[in-house]
Image (cartoon, rainbow, N blue to C red; front, side, top):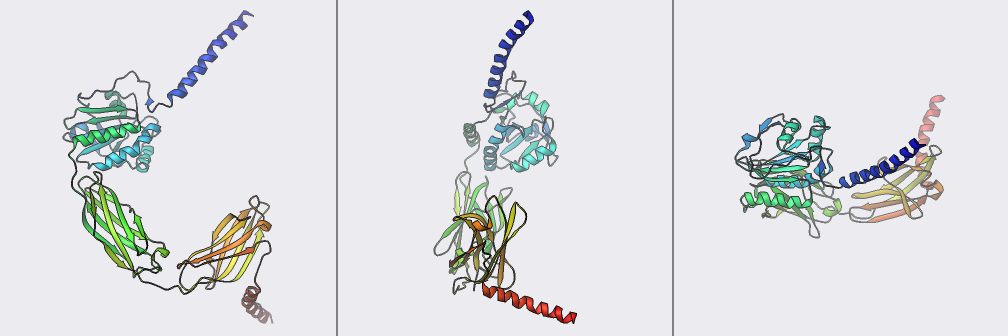
Length: 426
């Protein structure tokens, strides 16, 4: 009996303690720093010499020593691929990195190399756009030397190899500290981006039938370009494109095809293009206007919907196929040709038409019975041409509506085949 009483008393005290411990763990998880078992360590203070280290880049396999980087600013990022706050900080770190060329600030990220693998770090680096030095190995020694007890931890090291900045943990306000830190140490950039080459070209023509241009740009900027915008204008509308670009040293290179909605070009004779380049200090340079002629084609009428066949076939007890074959005529260009399978005015499925032959188009799709049955469905055919002419017509799916002329057309195709086979048998 005494043993039972003692056991009950122990449980009475232990269970609340376990619950408190659990609550404390949940509370700690909200802190924006992942703390290790060495939390009694103190981070190195600004003004103290930064311990030298030698690391290997995870991709290039190049060895880098801190002492070899004297004369430039160095920014260290102690991270892990599984660390939430580390991941949250990365877009901001990428933004700061893009402001400076490597001869000004050398960024280095050092993975904790515990539970991470080299392949994992390589993939993580690529997915997070970490275009600076990333090291996988030897973090244990480095983290001991730098007294790292939680991640992320950031260190700034000056040209003389002394620590000038230290931060453990992440919050958006830390980003402002980084901007202030480097902005105060490096000279202001007052030079706007410079256009080396600008070239816009087309294929055989620019038209609704060939609605694309080729863009070839080369821009130089001593502190990196932040944004490139191409304003593309017709007589009625202006659209802004932000093309992808590649950085090579101080050069920003663009080699890209831009494709337009044909309706944007319809009934137009000229395309005007202006390039604007902005650097991270908000210095802006804008090009002159470049003009490309647009070959104009007239759309003389709306699309014409002729013979239509709507049918369905049960696949199994769970789904059925709907097939729509339509005769469609358009003198210039269709920009939309779809079948909307609708139930009580709501779309169940939208399927695009594909060419079947010179005169007919076909759309086929599967539908689950738990979404609708054939009796519930209406097939709404929607056609739109480049001039904006719109044609809409609805057909019942369950009725398997087939126009009589369409049946005659099919019969005219099948009958000769039957006659040929009959003659061969004779």
